[in-house]
Amino acid sequence: MKKVLVTGGCGFIGSHTIVDLVNNGFEAISIDNLSNSEESALGRVAEIVGKKVKNYAIDLCDLEATRKVFAEHPDLVGIIHFAALKSVGDSVSQPLRYFDNNLNSLLNVMKCAKEFGVENIIFSSSCSVYGNTEVLPVTEDTPFQEAECPYARTKQMGEQMLRDFVVPNKNIKTIALRYFNPAGAHESAIIGEAASNKATNLVPVITETAIGKRNSMTVFGNDYDTRDGSCVRDYIHVMDLANAHTKCLEFLMNGKNDANFEVFNVGIGDGVTVLEAINAFEKVSGKKLNYELGDRRAGDVVAIYANPEKSMKMLNWSPKRGIEEIMKSAWDWELARTK
Image 1 (tube, rainbow, N blue to C red):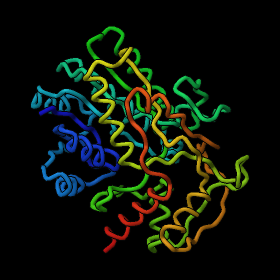
Image 2: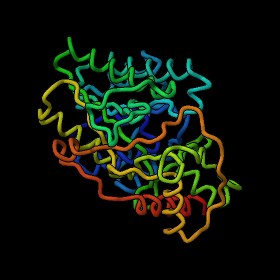
Image 3: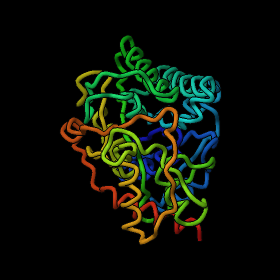
Image 4: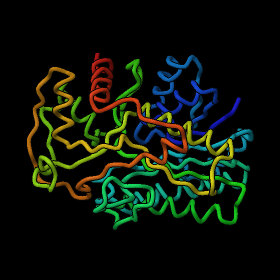
């Protein structure tokens, strides 16, 4: 059995990726300090895949605690590194916290990968690395613009750390997976987005508003230079994204990489405005959403969406679900978890 360490495995993308990994013949273990997740997510994963997944509730910024996990599992074939703080707004108000957590946790993962001979690393990067680019859709060669928030800067810096890391450590292969806006839930409605802290991503805010957990929601900005004045994003179904991580791991393990640091965009390849996303939800749910138009939010990029051709060609990956499928699965999950 091929064993993979998934950091942040109790989180939204991590838990769905574990499902895809197990369904494709891998064994997974998790490190998650539960700062914005709950270990019960892995119990729900076990319901889907029929296998228990162990979580180590430690902080990756604690090097010795991290080393102990690696020492306990000397047979790891790869690492998928999700664990990070990710709120744009919080990163603007708490930059030191974001630099400390996001960069030191990655640094310790790299140290342990080198020490224990783990040769394949998939890094959870983000479309935020591109900043307010004037070129759309973005390709992997689109130059970085100034980061719009400290969170985005940690992703830019994380990629550079990995790029430098593999120069002297030629046995280690890495991929920075730049993905866009993950949303939706597993088709079973057994797992979905369930952050411990207050949700800030658009889709869970929409579903929580629709079900009555929030009285209303705000669309941040209606005067951008877009089709309807609201921000444009590329929403990708979380299970499509999960499968891209599995494909990346197989790509590296099969030696298909041209370099020891590779970059792939993962998105649908089409931009959807915030208001269009709301309309898609109202269509599939039959519910009218209570929302208001508000001021722009600090740190938000105006428009970003992917050109995913490289991923589709080299990873043999393609997105299977669009915005309506995303909204339908997210709503099914909200209904199931609110019972």
